[in-house]
Picture 1 (tube, rainbow, N blue to C red):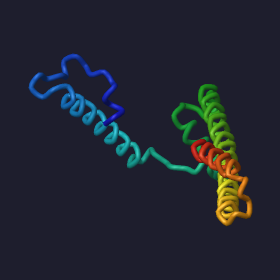
Picture 2: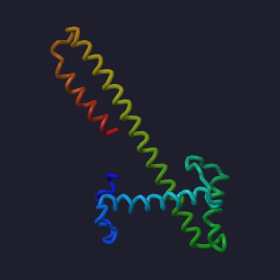
Picture 3: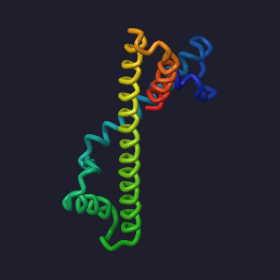
Picture 4: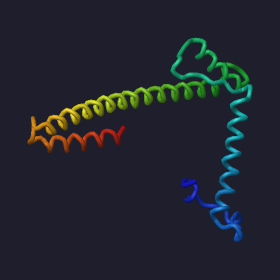
Length: 152
């Protein structure tokens, strides 16, 4: 409910007996229920077909093309072809971004593991007086690990 505390309420929805917070809770809970109901109706509809965008088989591409072009009178409709091109462009952009952020996440995870191992190593070495002058290294490794962990 923290998100909804800052959203404006319609002027007629605040009741003096119950207060603004109760009016806000009632107003937005009914909107959430309506949105959830519409989403459920869409998901159980016979018109809904879930697909994995990573699966680029010929059958799936043809299936998507048929679904998009079905809404137009003829399969040679210019509007349908433009919409189809726009849809596939969006799929390509989404896949590229997902691949990009996946790689960044993998790199950050590897860096985090490496920093954690180095931090453990230097902490043990300083603790057993093998490297007594290296306390600053532990500090910088701790800071770097905190930064990488918060980015990831």
